[in-house]
Image (cartoon, rainbow, N blue to C red; front, side, top):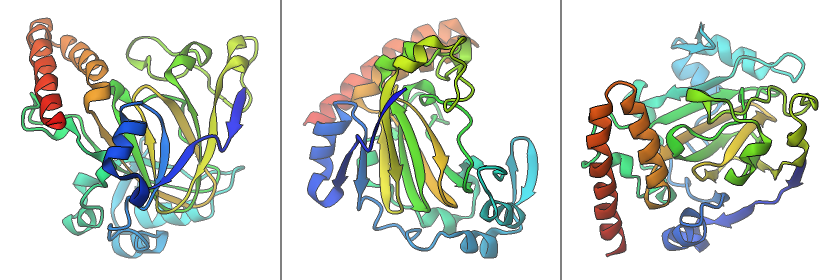
Length: 287
């Protein structure tokens, strides 16, 4: 596989700013690592393994179907090795946590805006936007190469420790053997480091980028970009997904396809409304 080491833009938010981000990365659907975007967060420098152990150690969390006391899990995470990786707490919804913890990561960085999922015009009381927590140890990794469900953007804010990411553009999809049906956003390759060449002969032609994410940095993964990560040191990350003009059409098609599994009529009525909503929001954004 032809990964190119460190081949990703790294920009400082003070120099880039909202317009530069939108023009160079958001509209172009190009990934970037931004420094300085979360300097205003109370969580910066505060959220450590000890912080969670001391303040939330008795909280019960679920990892791969098993319940853990967070303090016990963090002990395992800090002892994690590539040979014996600890369970990886991932996709933990932060809106279920106490208000003071949520306040530590507010407001979301400017690069995550606008997020049309948060619009009052969105046709659901429970729009599919999520702020999630990830805590993992050395050697743990995300289970599968994927792009985010419903073609949403991903913003990954690194608060503690280091991760290494692999990312591939949407045009590399045929080389990663997407699964079918509801899991079409996931690669069928189980082991990216040692792929079965007989089953996945095209994978060796795939081209992407390999890079590290450090504390204080925010990674923008545009809609449709395949990505996965492995943890290099004990790590704490926060993510949020989002939608705006560049990925609205793909999102609407995915979202309405999901709705259609329950009601084709509702999906048929919903799609023109959502495209109209996107046109209106685009006009406000450009005004």
